[in-house]
Amino acid sequence: MIQNIGALSPATPYKLYSHSGRRPSSLTSVLDAAKCRTVRNGLISRRTRFNGRKKFRCDASLNKEELNIFEKAVPENLREKVAVRSFTPKSDNEARSENLFEAALAVPELPGVPRPVWQVVAFSVPTGLLWYGWYKFAVEEELAAYEKSLGQKPVGYGGYATMGAFVGGLALGPLAEALSVPGGAAWSAVGGLWIYYTQYLLYKRVNLLYSDKGAEEPLTVWWLVFPGFNLLIGLRQLHFLAKFWAEERGEELQDPVADFFPFISCPDFGWKEFLRTPSLWLAPLKDVAPLEIDFLKD
Image 1: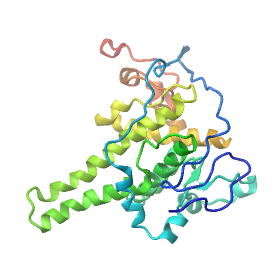
Image 2 (image 1 turned 180 degrees about the vertical axis):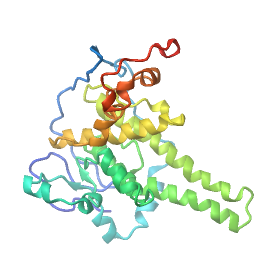
Image 3 (image 1 turned 90 degrees about the horizontal axis):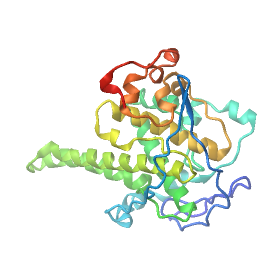
Image 4 (image 1 turned 120 degrees about the vertical axis):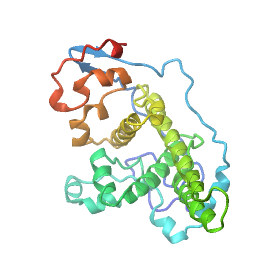
């Protein structure tokens, strides 16, 4: 297994290791508790839904060591190329000179690489969502590394098992069809169910990142199962995970897509509030008053 590849950056307390490496020491410091407030039409709202609730620590039912067969199947030299690295701050000139291609191929780091919504959309759409597969791999590796750096047992399965089991599940359909197994191509649903489950874990983990810092949980996880709202929570997950990593690095997140669509970056809100509040839909509608619809009142 890959462990301690490269030198540690003096600017960060994190250690470098792969998802299956040994647990490093705990962080030496954490961010101060954050307050989440938002002004909507002159009213300040603050939610503390996480207060008094048991923090999410999910021990998934599948054996994570068994799932590491996907990592072991990858040649060691390739694993080294995509192993989680310690973040090294860039100079202003280096940051400005970084092109889109370099950003698209950025390997996992600790703290994680901020990947704003505009970047994920710009890279995923032209590649037919292939790049999103890389995104999913990278964020799963980064989150597993971050959880280990805190002395916690990783909630997810890391990038190798997450994407390996997904691809393997999708392959069951064509294989069953070729072997005339009852159900045929429907067996590919196994891959879909698996990736859906890992998305659920991802949303819970992003919420946990914020609640552990004393901030409100930004994602309404149950939206995952409702068409339309599942897109909303997916976009919000992209933004708030990128925002968290940017704050961990001491960087400012630039995300014009989230700025134009306020519902992506606004603190948590209910589905009724979203439907009756045009200012959440588009930035040009920021001065439009909420709709007076009895059905949508809290």
